[in-house]
Image (cartoon, rainbow, N blue to C red):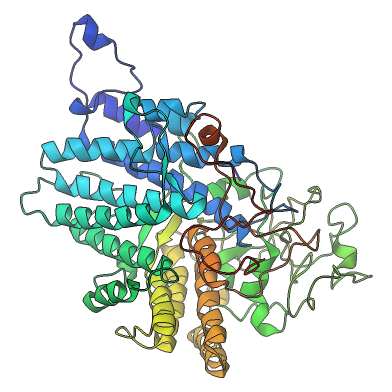
Amino acid sequence: MNYKKILIGSVTISLLVGLASCSKSLDERLVNPNYPGTSTADVDLYLNQVQLTFNNLWLTASDYGAQLTRQQQWVGPFYRNAYTPASFDGEWEIAYAGGSTQFGAYYGALGASASTYGGVIPNADALIKLAQTQKKYIQSGIARILKAFSLGILVDDFGDVPYSEANHGNSNTNPKVDPGASIYAGIQTLLDSAILDLQNPDAAAGPANDLFYPGDNEAANWITLAKTLKLKFYMQTRLVDNAVATKIQALLTENDLINDPSQDFAFKYGTSVTAPDSRHEHYALDYVNSGGVGEYICNYFMWMVTAQKYGGTVNLSGDPRTRYYFYRQVGTYSWANSQTCPCFVNSQFGTSPTFPAWYPSVPSKTPYCVIGKGYMGRDHGDNSGAPPDGSYRTAFGVYPAAGEFDADQHESVSLGMGGQGAGINPIWLSSFTAFLEAEAALTLNITSQGTPRDLLEAGVNSSIEKVMSFPATVSVTPDPSFVPSATQVSNYVNLVLNNYDAATTDDARLNIIMTEYYLALWGNGVEPYNNYRRTGKPDNAQIAQAVPNPGFFMRSLYYPSVFVNRNANAPAQKTPGDAVNKVFWDNNPDNFVK
């Protein structure tokens, strides 16, 4: 989806307030007021702008990843025409649009999120220079981390992108791309430099309002994040770097990683509806007073959470996260007819069950149309028109969008329900670290933090704990009758571990680890897209519904139109769907994933 929260206007206004008074000199007045000079900017307010813009970049990439990996609706039906190069202009502009710099201006035609306030990378570069002159090393360290993460997102989505020649102003308005592997090396260098900044004993006071890690442990938390990101990016290259295991081992031995929910790297939203709308984007889409839910959750993801482990039958007493992840407006399909749900007649609950011939068994091996007990989403690659079904669609629940907890209310959504949108973007959580360590233990035999089974168990427990404790953070009190019991939690964890113990190959064990990682990633589409291309898991991903052969899965995205159309040194446009177009760390076979 293209609906994004633009939260940075108020920060930029505050930034203007923090500028020194203008001189009466005519020359000094020849400055675009939308791009005040950095030399007089307030470092802390500038940092907030970088943090907010980074969140917008991550959110944009997350939505595309969630669509491709069956968390959210992907229309399709072919990978070659599901998107266009212009689809990705926003992500590019949020990253590279340079405020007053020529690099950003050259890529022009920018929306408010980019052209008015500048992109995360050029703003981070300007902030680093300014902060260094004022010995605000904590701020410069944070900016380096956010720049590194942003570059990683760009490489993982597009492949080779501008890096060494980027943001050079008029001296180079047509920057060439760098190889993705070279940029990854630069990311590690940036993270190392960030750690040094954050450890600098001569640092001035930290930011007055850190949007991610406020409080006394600010610098320590950012250092832990930097080291966790080093692990993330090293693991991303494990298929193509024979020496990476030693680097991963060193990080796991030191163990200064995001291992506790108190260290989670998440962006927190507010409840304001206007001026600006500060709510979680999925809350704003789903919880309205008229028209019903404004998007589709992919049926496959809901089926994976509620039914896949139970023979395809929805089990509301299974995965403890179910009632937190999804909110049902209805509990049955009595409303379904040829107008409101055209595919229902051919579903497992219809009068004439007929499934795509290329599908495996429905519902035990894959969902089709609806999954049961009122859950209503959309199949992967269903390109049929949207019927009048907004009053029946399943909405994002209390986690992570701060929607409603599902206590079988079966009531229509409305503005203000649940946590009113004060949710989070779960960018990196402690459970993600445990699952990544489990992958490293299984595939690289690095077991300093435990066996793959132990780390799998830790990841599942950490995810469930995070989700079940979340309502209290957004002032929601679930009906105690529907809160999962300790027995339900232990039954689920034991089911996962029993399945792991029954697996007879490392590939089957990896599938269980990565499947549980996938389920824990609800609300995060960046990591599932990376994991799916790296591991091919979950290995039962729903096949496109409308056509038997949608083409090659998009192993990278189109280059944005604002890049290839306006840069004389841009590479030739890619042809997703017709060609594979892998990023550098993906050496898996062409038909590796669907």
